[in-house]
Amino acid sequence: MRFRAILTLTTLFMTCFTLAVFAQPLHPWGAVARTDSLPENQSVSGQIASVGDAVFTVSVSKEKQAAQTVEFLMDDKTKVEGKLTIGAHALVEYRSDSGKNIAVHVVITPASGMGAY
Image 1: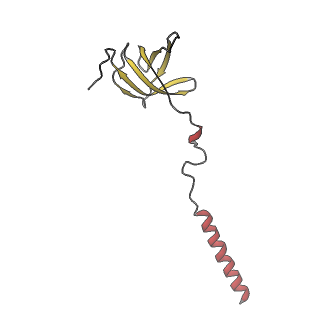
Image 2: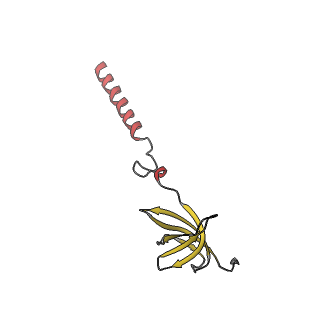
Image 3: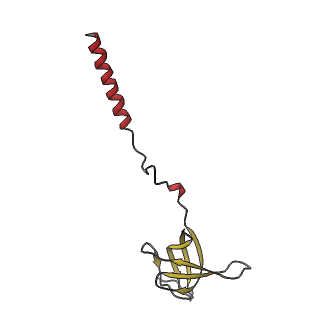
């Protein structure tokens, strides 16, 4: 009788312990996807120098330096506010992927300086 009681209590203890281990919540992001290793978006502003089907370039001029042109690719996730026209001022938020700049969000103000209402 004593052996049966010890065996029953041991089985009950092991069952409770096993359930407690498997009841722990899983990590919400998983072990593979790590958000701290993803690069943050960058931004640049300047005049639009050229516009293509899925690409455009922005001429960026910094203080006391010659203007540089930066090329941006657009994909189906790119959000564009305004119309891409040559000479318009653009603020581009982008991410770098395999050495290419992919536009994430583009805000365009007309070349005349007037904002849209």
